Image 1 (cartoon, rainbow, N blue to C red):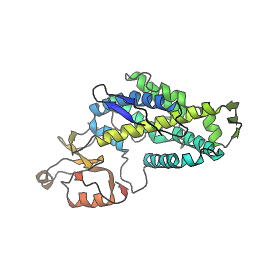
Image 2 (cartoon, rainbow, N blue to C red; image 1 turned 135 degrees about the horizontal axis):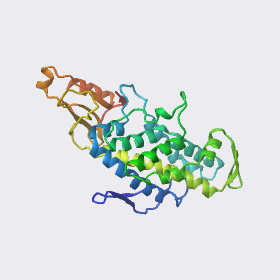
Image 3 (cartoon, one colour; image 1 turned 120 degrees about the vertical axis):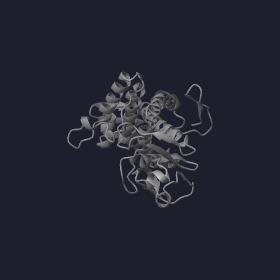
Image 4 (tube, rainbow, N blue to C red; image 1 turned 60 degrees about the vertical axis):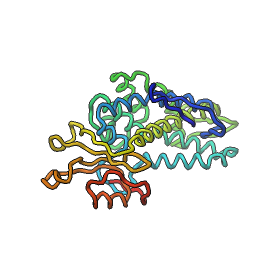
Length: 314
């Protein structure tokens, strides 16, 4: 979708173009939902960045300590949905397309990282630090809270922090009965309908694809905002730590940037002399293997080249 962002109004709009298909042929629900999500979530992102750029970047990059490659579920979701989008036109006249579209709906609505990003941004916007598990208190044992409970929590946080109504469209996108039917294989396709048994209900094709395209719009709005803010870092920038981060008095962080991409991590902004005098350093981020080697070899390096090898998180 060709988005237009007004830097002065901090608002998104769109320009129509040919061939702009998602999972249905230019379904009318997609564009209004996408614009609504973007313009509801962007003020939250903006305030979080203003409140603590350090915590904002931790949430934006999804940094959860040290890990090896392949532990970023958000990136896997982005890749998977792009793959589905690429193959969907070739399946659009076959029943498997509807099954795949339903899977996409369930996958997006269940994806934990979407809700973690939004909950962190809401909390960081009012001064809290980044938290690796925002919904821990809602769990029962190891069971993940339902999307409905997470949406309720997000709505409560939004209302309490000056963002009332920011999650109304998301609430209208969530259908617990349809989700359960999808993941329990308890639905059937018949005559253009999706029929479920618990409770007994028949969804029209338009009802189903409205929910599916709203879900895709929800996902894509976060992909867009994440990419926009990551890409806004063109050069390494020195920023203050969040007060909760256990750095040395007066310590700051420098944002590590990959050329042509944007922010990929942060490290201590100590100078060479300060490090030689005994200042302890940290480094956080999502780096590639060759980048790790370059950063290890040159502790002052903060602008990485664009061309590197396979992803690595650390």
